[in-house]
Length: 269
Image (cartoon, rainbow, N blue to C red):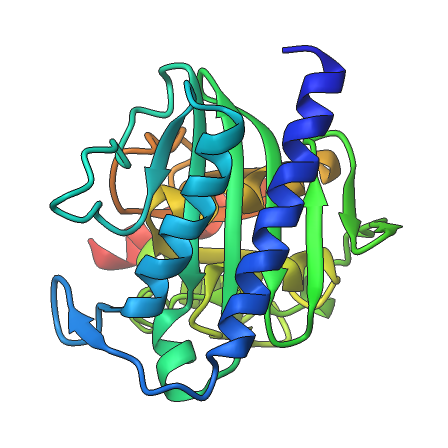
């Protein structure tokens, strides 16, 4: 796809995500309809579904031949495919409310995330921190916060905080607990989108969690200009098909993380 065509898609993505954020703010104090998905703490609201439909409709109006990989299942009367293989063609990856539990309980720390991939290659990433109104966007070459280009300076591990999934942290999955002892501590926010913008803002060093593709698709594009990698805990590629334990970290630190993992495995023997 040409540079001009990608720029048009990026502008559309920014517009639709901003509109989704405005919609959520307008309904922030509404009584929402809450449904459990896989278990009691895996929740979806009517607003998740409304935002997803709104964003997909906006994209489909401009690009009717593009595909979607989105968090919420399509309604029974909607035949659109929202679980398309990211390796096949032009695919938009959408998380309408990332941090739904935060949205329900706190009305804070939730995001709208949208990415665009061509045959598995990330071309566009957009994350909106809805409450603070900050839009993070990029094309894999440069990343921006609102209208300012981001310049991310990597701090030493011992001067930094980690963003973590609490289960993985307390059970020392992948040596994460051991790794944390050589940092200033950990933070658990409950939203991948917010953790990604915290990396971009220099607030945390890296992010370790158990995520689905729509949770990391946009963030991985936004971090790419700073030589970060988004991979499984063992360093192998994510498959964009289901939930996987993963990390987004500076590429030049992979060997250090692998060392902690190896020491952790030795302790278990």
